[in-house]
Length: 286
Image: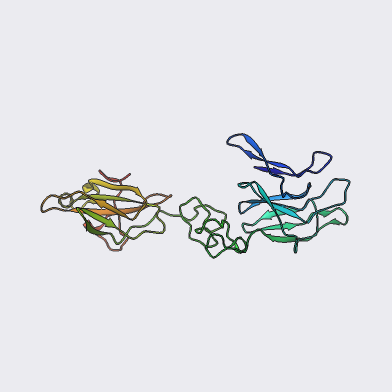
């Protein structure tokens, strides 16, 4: 929580503090480069900055401000807000953050009374800091993350990827993994598969072909080994060797923050032993 400005009852202030509720501790905000002391201003949080704007001086003064500042708590530093095109000076106005801009409206100017106008303030930079083709001025809600921009696919990463003010919204359990390939690598077999955009990890299970045949093609009953659990990559090596005249089968399922998919390639018309929609089984990954 960041507190800044206001009045001590007689004079306006330009100091403040940062409160950490986890540690129940306070740290002072820098006054170097801070806006002029004021009260009746607004402060909103936007794009990793606190934006202070407007307000006025002491109650005996008719001085109002149409200036402000941008405070970065990570570096404990201030930068001024532009006054070019800014609304007229005022206090007691409203200010909201839209996810891309700050909107100021209303308030009162001490010398002329109530205001019925306002302005839109674009916080940042025309520069695209993370290389995703969006800047804060074009709606990027996190210009330090290339996977976060307006309309981006929502990922299971705890971020508001599409900048709609919701985190991990619309995520569903991943579908089946298709295209599993097996190739020899030294004395091992390397399993690889195409990654799914909706997946954050993969589970890999295996069993013996002869056991599968003895269970009437039931992968659930024939699953014997968990080769990988929550694997971040799309390949894993199996150094086991099947018995003579026997072999191994392998299945992969995708996992994300919602849950696990099925050990199924997602194809239509699968029947019998080719339908690998299995859940937990002996030897299966959690």
